Image 1: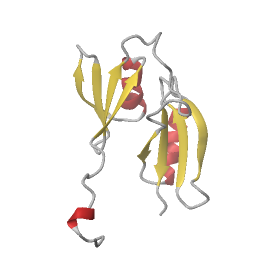
Image 2: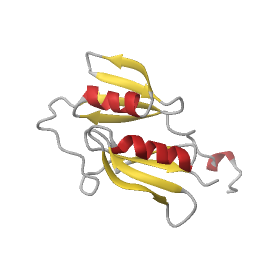
Image 3: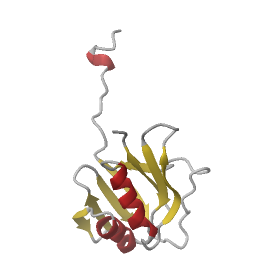
Image 4: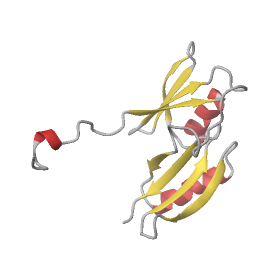
Length: 141
């Protein structure tokens, strides 16, 4: 079968949204809207949930039912999300994100902007409020 054939074409067209369960919905919502500049595009108070978007990707934030007894994020021992990555425009934008995150409440920077795999693309990693790992990537050029 040729790689040009419709049968081998991907059946999907990118992420529609990323859903995250968080221990503190207001804090997570504030991180995305106040720190990263996402827009609040919807809420479901009875669930409770908030929906935020950067104009390209929507992130759904779901309040954990009982945060005190919830299992904390553990990228090495739990099947599922290891981290999620968002693209920024360029290296200057990555540095600006890093600058904002350094003083953001509840954010732990795992590593500052650095080359990805020794190439010209740069990235950084942090844990957002609630402990979920988030990567920011600035494509080369």
